[in-house]
Amino acid sequence: MFDDADKASAKADPDEIEIARLAILDDLDFARARKEAALRLGIPLRLLDKLVESARRAAGTGGDSAPGGDPDAAILEDEIARGFAETYAGRLLFDHTAQRWSTWTGKRWVLDETDSVFFAVRNFCRQRMHEAAGRQRTLPIAMGKVAFAANVEKAARSDPRLAVTAAIWDRDPWLLGVPGGVIDLRTGKTRAPDPSFYISKQAAVAPGGECPLWRAFIERITGGDDELAAFL
Image 1: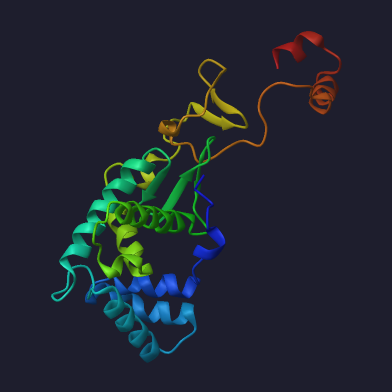
Image 2: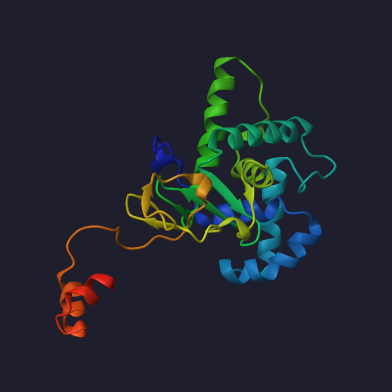
C-alpha cells in the first residue's frame, strides 16, 4: 500500500522508534508509561530517562509543546499531519479504543502489526522535505529526526478523517465480508468491497462452486428425500 522506495535505507530500529514516541509524551504521560517501556526495551529506568531526554533535546522539543521548543517545527508538524490525513483518508484509520492503526487492504480493514503506518509517516515527511528543498524553503533541523515523524503521527491520530472508535467495525450485521467482495445477507447479492463498510472480519470462502461433501451429508441425513434436501 505504501511507497517502497528507499525502504531498506529508511528502516529504523524499533527501539529508536519507541524512544522517539516516548519523547513526545508530556511529563505525566511519560511517568505513567516509563516502567512498562523500560521492561519492554529491557533497560534500566535511569537509562530510559537519559535516552528520552536526549531524544527531546535532539528534536528541539520538550514534549508536546514545552517552552524552548522550535515553534517553526511545531507548526510544520501540524501542517504535515493535516496533509498526511488528507492523503491517506479512506486508507488508514486510528482506533482510539484499541490505540491501534488499521489499514485498508482493498478488501477489508486489518490491524497494522508491523508499524507500516509509522513508516508511511516517515516517508511522507521525507517527501515534504524534498519538495521544500526544491522550493528552497528553509526547514527546521528537527524535521529530519525520527521524533519529528513521531510527532506528526501522533497529531494525525486525532484528525477526524482518520480517528474512529471500536464501535465502527463490522457494525452492519447484514454485510458479510468474503474473498472478492461483500455479501448482502438481505438480498444474497455480492457487492464490491468498500472501506466505508468498515468490515474487519472476513469469511474464508465465498458463495458458489461445488460442495460434494455437503451434498453427501444432506443426502445421508434426509435418507434420499429430494424434496426435504431441496428445502434444507
